[in-house]
Amino acid sequence: SLATLVPASDSRDDVSLQGREPEDIAGRAVIVAESVDSHGVKSAIDFPAAEYPAAAKHFSQKRKELGLSLEQIVERIGSGGQEKNLRRLLLFEKDGYIGPRLIRKLYYALPEVPELATLIQSQIEDERESRRLVKEESARKSRARIALLFKYMDVIRSQRNRILRNPGLAYAASSETFTSFAYVAGSGPLGLGHLCLIWERNIMATFCPECEGKMLLLYAGGSILTGNHRLHSLCEDCGHSMLWEKRELAGFARSIYLPICEVREEVQDLCDGSRKDAMPLNAALRTLTEDCPVSIPADTSDLEEPGEDLDGFDFGGGMTINGKRIILE
Image 1: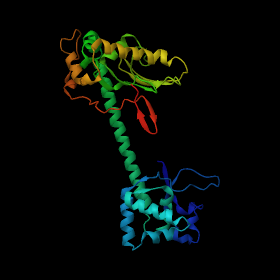
Image 2: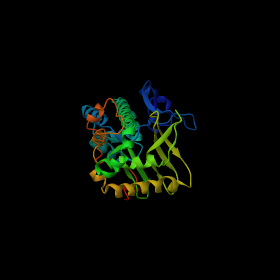
Image 3: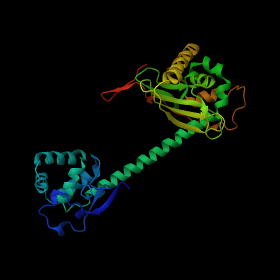
Image 4: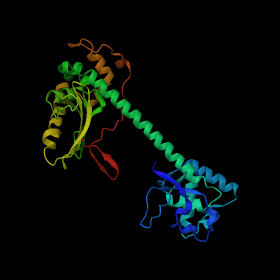
């Protein structure tokens, strides 16, 4: 856990305790960060400044039940900055936005409402759990997409020429197969046509740590300025996938960026199309299983599903200027 319950009396550095009798706060608890300052005193309530609508609604309801105005609460808080505290309380009631300092002040100024911190902590934990579930689901879908590519890898490679003549097949891509280069053109999805040429030419192919087979490139990203880059590879033998990072100041453009740009140009020339012509990946693979020169997987029911919708998917690349993503293509 990121937070711990300790007695409020442990927070002796709080100026809002001045003039208060010790028994007024005895036994009460506040949530504090697990850190200790130079005096050995644990730090103040450590919530991120954010919107806490449930706590704001509870605060507004309790304040009205107690017959307190916001101005009266500000007077209870004291310690100067009354106009600023009033603006912050108005914002808290209106939008639920509040920071850790004001939460702490309210905790001591409103002993009648000690549960504010608990409500906020509860929301933080709920959001943390929600993010964990979303992350797990995203990882599960990612594994399924990579497994699909591995399952039909032989089907894809056996029909290289057919794919490169058909823009719908050549540009059919997964959200796992793309490039993301900073500052320069060349970012975007890698379709089946791109993958055929990248795998054929062993662009950034490496050895699998699991079976010592060959790992083929799915994703490449990085910067030609620093040479730092990240790659995602898939083993053609055992299906093991790995995301790895390499740091070097030279060789990025020669070994990764330029070869992939050449592949993009070649695919465009061969199939005379663009990513707008792309078929959904599942539909493309289903087409490739028809009249396939190699044996296809016994179970192709996974291709009956709709598959991914890549419309609006952010494949990265470009640069960020004043918080706005600029894609250079």
